[in-house]
Length: 304
Image (cartoon, rainbow, N blue to C red; front, side):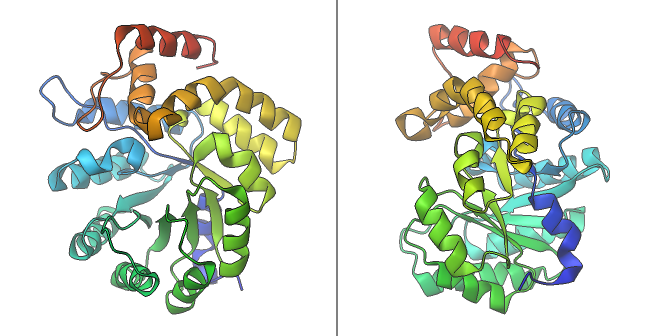
């Protein structure tokens, strides 16, 4: 079963590079809407066709409610039909539902539901949470963002049976074997499977059935991320791994210390290119000057 055929175009949009724009800030620590629009245009001009405002690379948890709504609206306005918008929603259930409805009203066509942040998440409660969001916006495609290694594929299958608009899964557990088993227990053909740990994990996840991957790196160089996707789609493992080696040093900087500098490194790379300020909000922090030079040096060797 492949789900509701009415969502075919949305499923296609998920089998792609799912770009997560950063949220640039001004010197006064407000969202820099002008810089944000510029970054989104750069992604679109670079060939990106699926955008996730309010993703983790966009500092979702550091934004206020008005800022999250503004970022969604800016993305829809700037993409103007050139890309499919998959807006991030989450937090407590009423907030997640309200944000999903706002995303729908703003013109987004899908929502990505962040991993619930409650300290006590039961398997059935996970289904209930996502079902409530999906049923609130039946016209939108819904994509759960799974970071919980203990969630069973059977629960994903149950959610799919209950909600035909749940069409994709962003799987972000760093275990390719677990992903392969989860996807098959949930229904390989029922959902579009997205490698939620970006380019470093994309080759291994594609070998197990993923057809898209998320990316924060794409902010720096759309051509690098799209080049990896093209190689993976054609089964050119050698070419994909050549790109993997190219981006590996930067991605390892992002992943170090439990991803403490995940967003910081991307913003530093963009700052080195003069595209936005390096500012991030606590609990993230900016890099020391020596590490800034390291990031700039890595990016200088790329085709950007």
